[in-house]
Amino acid sequence: MMTNIYFCGYSYHINGYHSQHKSGYPSYLFRLQTEGHCEVVVKGKNMKIEKGDLMLIKPGDHYELLVKAGQNSGDYHLVCEGAWVDEWWSRSEKPAVSRIDLDERVLSLWRHIMIEKRRPASIQNEELANYLLRALCLSLERAVNETDQSFSHPYTVTRMMRYIEEHATTTFKIEDVAQYAGLSVSRSVHLFKSSVGKTMMEYAQEIRLFAAMERMKYTSISLEQIALDCGFGSYPYFHKVFKKKYGIAPGAYRRKG
Image (cartoon, rainbow, N blue to C red; front, side):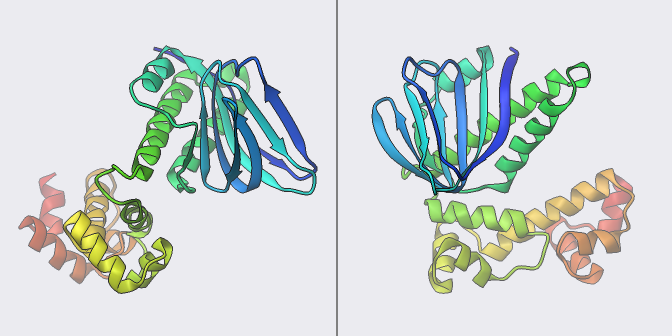
């Protein structure tokens, strides 16, 4: 099932802007506010859109966007349609506006699609753009679900998990995670352990080990460099953690693979 991406880009308004589709938006529209704020009317409801707000508009929805003079507003947006998007949209409720914050993984997918669509038509890879769009849709769906209060982990815990996933292979402190989540250190430590079933550092260690295993399988990088790249600090410590977890030394694991 192919899809059509009619437009994918970034807009920044500082001198005012107004757009309206009273007869219904013609396609699917995804819009993520990244800077400033604006006002929208969706299906007759007036809303203020702020940084981190995601809009999901389906064909036929009344949609109006207003950026007042003197305001600033930046956003990523994408217009598309197709059978796969129809199926994706219909399988779960899609709120018109959700607060998902700015996830670099989502923004990276958005930018990748933008780059692909900027290429001359003769060298565009439609199949690649198709799969990137699917990945973006699924990532947006997960981000929306994670902000839902009925989700298995509280949204604050999801934010902490996201921070750790993005910084696991670098040096970070528990204080950094707590600050990102807007909690005290003691509260963040307790909430994370009770929700995830492991400490923040145990969670980070799992991500580091997985990253190290991928590098051992698919690259010829030295084990010493892998240990540094994946956040272990030194090879002796990496060797100790790896062997304790898997019962085999990193070198033997690589030779076995």
